[in-house]
Every structure is written in C-alpha cells, then in structure tokens.
Image 1 (cartoon, rainbow, N blue to C red):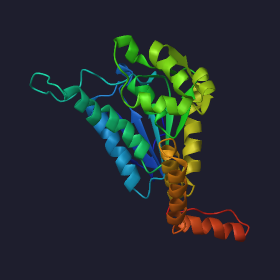
Image 2: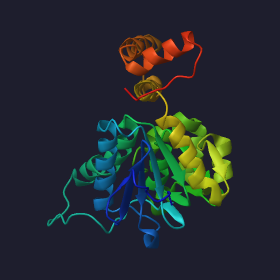
Image 3: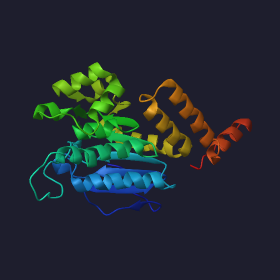
Length: 275
C-alpha cells in the first residue's frame, strides 16, 4: 500500500481504485482485496482514465500501479460489466476484448509517463499482462504470475501473446501459455519478466524510491525513449533509426534537454522540470 498523502497531495475518495498524487508521482491502487483484485468494468475504466490523466498532467512525472491485499490482480472479473440485454451474436466476444482488456493494456503501454508495477501478490491472466505491460516491474517475494487462460480452455487476451514473446522469446512464452503453471517471482526475475524481487515489506518503499527518481528525471526524454523501445520490435532498422533521429530532434526543443547539456558544460548536476 503506498504511503498516505501529505498536505501537498491530492487524494480521491476511497473506492475500488485508490488514487493519490504527490511529489510528481501518481499512485493507482486496485482495491478489491476480497476478490484478489479481479478487475471489474468500472475499475478498468477508472484505471484507463487515470493513466490518460497522468499523460496529460504536467504535474505527474511517474506512475505506480499496485494493489491492496494478497493479490495484485486475479484477472478480469467476468461477473461484472454492463448488461448487454440480448443474445450473443458473432463479433460480440472480439468487440468485448478490443474495448476491454486490450484497451487497458494499451493505456499502460501508451501512457506518456513511465509506469512502475509494484506486484504485491498473485498476478493471473489479465493481471499478469497488466504488470508485464508496465515499463518497470517490481515484485514482492510472495508474488507469482499465472497464465491462467489455458486452465479454462481459453486463448490468452489482454495482449499476452504480444507481450510475452517480446519479453522472453517465443519458446519461453509458449511454455507459460501452454501449461499455465504458476511462476514464482524469483523465476519471473530470472526469465526477465521482473526487474527486481524484494521482501514483501520493502516493495512499497522501493517503488516509491524508483518513482521519485523517475519523477526527478527529464520527463519528455523518458516518454520518447519509452515510445522508441516499445516500437523497436515492430519496425525494421531503417524505420527505427529514423524514429530515433526524429525523437532527438523533438527532444532537443525541450527545457530539460537544454538543461542537461548546459549542466554538463557547467559541470553541475542537472535540474529537470519535466518540460
């Protein structure tokens, strides 16, 4: 659970998604511990909205996504959602996935601020993909990741078959997706799915430390770097090099890039303002 807001922070009313901001960091916390934070329709829409808001808010320079209780996210809550009021027809399932799980994962990938997952417990199905979509992943020692879809006779959704091969290669991805075995945090770290595994009691403090480092960094440069890395495996070398050159061109118009160069010449630490 992230630290309580101080006088300089704003906090939303307590609900199924807790939100607080302070010192340039937006904390988004799933808060249905009794359901292992299985994501409801309302929660999904709230998280998507908060991530879009973080992109647009110059006062937010990093995001932490975490949860309360023993579970990070047990996947989608299939019992929630608006009533359709009719018989299912061809196209309904695909539309539900596009407008639901895929929008949630895309919101993380497309957020213009770096997003840290602080995985406090079990991350299953969509919950695992929610963590893997984040830019940096911290996991408690008690955390585990489960590609649960195959256990229910389902195809993975929420971008799982897109994210996993890019993170760990196709053979490892297929092992996880085909068998659906629980992957302990330390094994996830070994495979490259997790940046750090921490004692449970240290997870929040480390997430806070990393988020503050990011919030003190050159925000626009980080956003452009995130875009370049996320696009790198979907483009050829010429396209990637052109994108890199254009990102440099755009970034050099920012205050922080000019401050970085100036501080190097003046032999002093830079002070980045996030613009």
